[in-house]
Length: 148
Image (tube, rainbow, N blue to C red):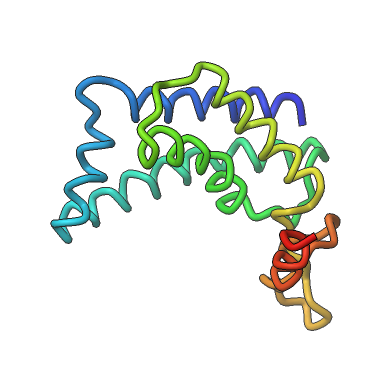
């Protein structure tokens, strides 16, 4: 998943820039979205558009055989961006130029392990509970992993 990781890192660098530029429209929109339903809708539209445009990264990795055809692109992208929001928006840490690359590597590793795979059920439907795929970790097993 080398090319996809490179593209993901580029995408994450863009997100980091959007969250750290001064003034940051993205951060201002996040802040006002807690007080205004109109701003909340605008924020959802902004990120829905960004994620939709970026799903091509995952689709191309699937086409190259780097990821399972059942990979949930949106879940993978959300997981890849989560460390940036955690560090930059919630913890308000200074920008770290290495964070996007590390987040892309972590998401790529999890994707290769099947963490974002929705397996078809016996009835041919996608089973959201089977999202752990090849990693073999189901959502209800997470507590067991943490407790070990």
